[in-house]
Length: 128
Image (tube, rainbow, N blue to C red; front, top):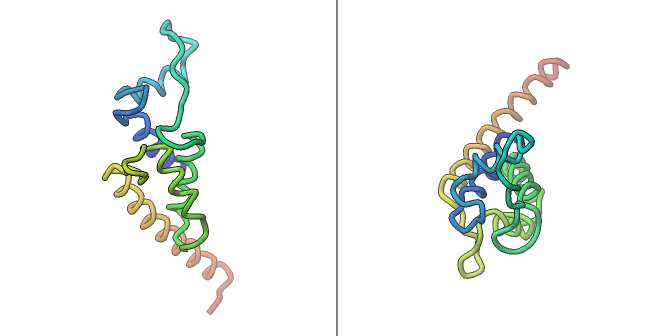
């Protein structure tokens, strides 16, 4: 899930409307290792639309996509998180295609891992 959240945040950093522009990886590098950088302070993370915090929004989307059981999270919060990370057009979030495909891949991988975990529990307790 952490890898997926990192990807969702990276896509937020590379959005054309973001103040950090297309240098999302550069932004992450200078934020993590700013002590060694002679550049000025990096701009703070901010939502493109709505309110919230992009880091927590990315983790919420990753957790929501990782839960393969529908209805375990609120759809309003998911919409708010998508608006925060990717902006809006006409009140609807603008989701990049790569984010949609990453969410589908994450849901399939999560379902597979949950299935394998349940098989392992069954075999451990020899449930028939």
